Structures are given as C-alpha cells and as structure tokens.
Length: 539
Image (cartoon, rainbow, N blue to C red):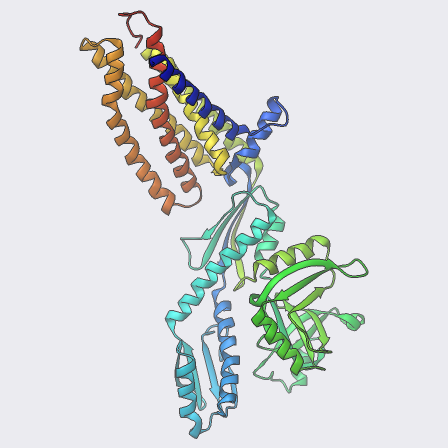
C-alpha cells in the first residue's frame, strides 16, 4: 500500500515537471541548443530592461478636452436660445487657451436676461452664470466638472494608446498614469521600432468634419484676416491644409476659414478601414455611429452647395462642395502609403485622443544593455544557486541531494508559470527568482534541522522524518504567507518592474511550499524504503 502511494505521488511530481517544462519551451521546432533557446524566448517575454525598447513620459494637454466640451456646450446653447426665442449677439470663449471653461454671451436684451438665466440653470447645471465685462454674461464650468473632464481625458488617452499599441503587436507593454506628475502617462514598449511607435502614439488623430465659413481659400493667414477686415468672426477659426483637388496648381500650404465647432468628431467614429481607389492609391474609409450619422446627414442635407472640410490633427485634408445629403460614412484620401493608411485606420478605429499629448521624456533602451542584464542576472542566479546547492550537499550529506532536486523543480515550476501566464520577466523579476531560491533553502533548512533534532532525541529515521515535516509545516506556512501577503500588496499597488518582481516572488513562494513539503517528503520516503531497518539517515 505504501509502495503504491509512493508511485502515485512520484507520477504526480513527474507530471507537474513535464507540464511546466512544456510551459518553458512549448514544442520547439528544432531540438538543439539554438532551437531550445528560440523556444524559450518565444514563451517567456522579456521586459524593457532586458529586451530593449522605448520608455516615454507623456503630458496630456487636458485643456484641449475642456475646450472640446465647452465647444459642444456653445453649439447646444445657441440651438437652445434660438429655440426659446432668446435674442443674443454672439457666444464665444474669451480666453480658450488659459480659461477653456469660460463661455461669454453678449448682446442679450434686458427683457431676455431672465430667460437666459433660466435656460442655463435648467439645461446646463454644470455651469455657473455671472455678469461679465462689456454687458456680457459669463458661463463658467464648475471646478469639479473641470477636474472630472481632465481626469477622463487621461483615462481615455491611456485606453486609446493601449489599443493602438496592441494593434502593433507589442508584447506586454506598460501604459499607465504616471504617479509623479499631473496628468502624465508613462509608457514602456519592449522590442518595438521606437520611431513608428512614437508617431502612432503621439498623433492625436483628431478627425473633425467642419462647415466652411468662407468658401474662399487663402495663401496666408494675413490675407484671410484682410478679407475679413482684420477680425475673424467669433464662430470662425483659421486652419491650415495642403492644396486639395483642383487647387494642386496653387500654393502647397493654404489657409481655410472654418466653423469653430465640428459637425462630427472622432468620438462619433464607429469603425475605419483601409481600401484603394480605382487607381490603386490607398484610402481610409470611416463609418459613423447612429448619433453622429444623423447629425452628419442633417448638416449636409441643410448645406447642399456649401463647402465641407475634413480636418485631421488640426489640418485640412479634404475640402469639397456638398453635392447631396451624406449618410453615416466618408473617406479620406491623399498621399497615403499602405503603412500610413493602416496606421491612420488604427488611430481612427481606436478613437481619437481626447487631447493633444507632449513627450516630456524619451529613452531608447538598446538591446545590448538588455543582453548584458540577462547575462549578469543569469550568472548571478547560477552562481548563487550553485553555491547554495553545494552547501546543502556538504552540510546535509546525502539529504542535500533531496533539497537540491526540490530547488531545481522549484525553478522549473517558476519559469513554466512565466511561460504559461505570459508575464514579463524583468531584471527585478530575476531578483525575485533568486530570492525564491533563498526562501526554498530556508524551508529545507527548517525541515532538516527539525529531523536532526528528532534523531538526537532517539527517534528512528522514519519517525524523525515524519515528525520533522509535521512540526515544520506551520512554521513554513507562516513565513511564506507573510511574504506572500507583502508581495500581493506590491502586485496591487506596484507598477512595472515592481509588480513583475512581486508576481515572480509570489508564485515562487507557492512553488516553494509544494517542493519543500510535498516533493522533498516523497524523496525522503523513497530513500527510507531502500534502507535496511535501523540504518542511519544521511543528514
């Protein structure tokens, strides 16, 4: 019966070993040193400090998001006042650069002021209304709402960037809010072309469809201002763009006078895909949501014969006459390569960034540095493990082999876990592996010393082993659980390499409990079965 239980436990250990070896290597294409190395690198993902790549800290220009929100409020306020027959002169933002949360309403007759206040209080509870300069009224977005919009902009920017990076196929990127700055994002991209990644991330891909205030196109901003007597209409903005269509014979950089507000924006895009024209030139088709499609259809239906501009990243890329009512789709063309068209479709499909971003810090980590880190980390682990295993053999004699086998299995289980989970191995993660080895040795020392103590008290080898494992169990659990709790806290609140270290340590400690208590006990039992009755235990 004892022999049968031992065989069953041995078979279980071998099965666990094979499963986690598969986790490390998978099924290699070649069963030689190079093939196993390639399989290992494909299964275990290396972090930025080991593989090389790009480290970025981005500043989210959160005022852009507040400006977009107040732009929408202006258009809705105009519609609301017109619907309620409240007369007004103009509605604009006095200082959009520094105070995007403020909207000014001028030219409201004295007998309509009560209606204005009631309209704002009923329809715009997020705004406070007060008397401004030059007989105007000032709507100010409440500070709580401003803070909410700014934080939402950071959150949405992180999600948008993550979708773009995922589309590039980057393994285990780090994209999260930077805790040391206001409205900043930290990004780590292991093993990716830095230039293409930065271009894809930084591009806001803010697609807007705007109506034209002026059908004319000007060669410079100065001439556009002169055409409007030196002052742009309050609801107009000058936006640059390349020559388009029949205008290709003119200057290559033109100025368009467009509506300050957008008919639809990138937020209204449901999908985007690449395609080609009859000539084979790449184009990008975009499709709008139901709400965006209805607004686009209503606007184009009401402005047949007028001009419409498609603005991408604050630059006009299409400027054409509205010939008929347009539904829920459109296209962008002009000078795309297959790769740039694909990148634009990724950016549009993932959603426009809610605000512009600025690169505050950029570090390119070369792969040679990662190779040196791997070499030194692995060397430290091998030397440390070899010294520990040699010590166990010298100090605990034949029983030291037991501990060494348990340590090797522990390492196999830990690396297999990294392969199965897809977790990223960083330099701190290698430190976690080494620390796990130390904890494994500590567990074996506790058990072996307890066995020695029982032997000194006159117990037989079998009884000493039984008592040694039984009395050490609670101590081992106590030491491991307290460390696992600490590591779990690091997993929850830590970031990047700190979290990688904690994950490696946490699973390594769980593997320690299995190898030190279960595997080591099975090896002892197998050794005791081969001994003659009364034969001493080599410990």
